[in-house]
Amino acid sequence: YVHSPKWINGSIFYIIFLIVVFDNIQRLNKKIQARNIIKNTKYNKLNNKVIFSLNRNNLNIRSYSTNASSNKSNELLCSERLITIIKELGLSTVYIFENLDQENIKKQIQNETKGLSGIYMIVNKITKDYYIGSAATNRFYPRFSNHLIYFRGSKIVKSAVKKYGLSNFAFIILDLFPSIVTKQNNKELLDLEDRYLKLLLPNYNILTEAGSSFGYKHTEVDRQKMKDSFNDARREMISSLNRGKKFSLETIQKMREKALNKLPMSDKTRKKCITNTRPVVLYNLNGTVYGEYSTILDAANSVNCGEKTIRRALQTKKGLIKRQWIVKDISRNK
Image 1: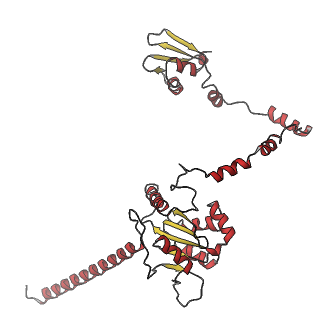
Image 2: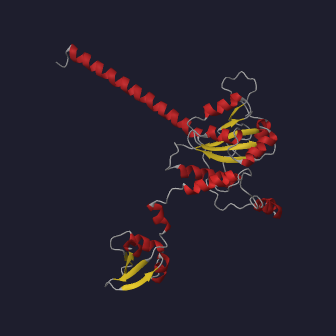
Image 3: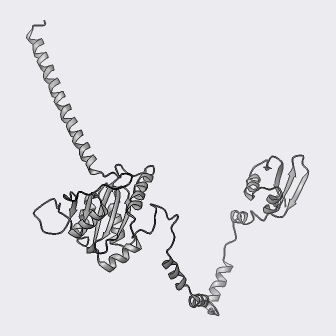
């Protein structure tokens, strides 16, 4: 049977099958390795002290311009002015977009940043000032449009764009976050932004910490401006807005009707209003009266506890406080 033609044909088929499977596995491994290489080169990583230094001889960045070119991928070198700024800061960039006033550049930003998240920078190419922020997954373009088109973002950036013109600004993606941003890992993205803020110290950013206004202090100039804007003349103007003002008979009648037709206070609202003013009695555990009080605050002070302790006890059946007293609401018995 071993030497039969049927057995030989089956063996040949089995060997061919193994060769095909092995070949497919090798191809799959090569594809996975290639994807990992692309992924590793796509995301920048921060060192402890400095951001990736820029290769000053070869500026290997992906930038977009509206200049005529035969290159269909639109991968062009950015302007010399922007190259100088990037070199001075020692940055390694992922994407660079210039000529932001052009519609095709806006569409490129929208298309190229789909599904991405990370750290971005808005650069004023004239003054070399810049703004740094973070964008969650698929939020790069909304950040770009809010800051530079609709002016719903930074007021400092808004004033600068109106002064120097949108064409003199660049939108740069500095770093990409390696996963989809969620509530669980959003803190990691903010930490990454915070490291960029502390390293680059952008003067267009008001806040010194990512995602928080804690610790921010107005400068002496800003404080003086606020004081000057609220001077004695302004105080007098505000106080005189309703001083000596007389309402017409029609307005008075409307106000009267509104007051008369006002709905009565609900029981729930009434209970909230009398929470701290209702009288209570404290009893000892043996049933004797410890004291009567006109308000919950007085009762709390007498037994050295908080108002919340007594309010919570009133909501329970036992009304026990500190395992020493029992509180009861007198107003309920009336």
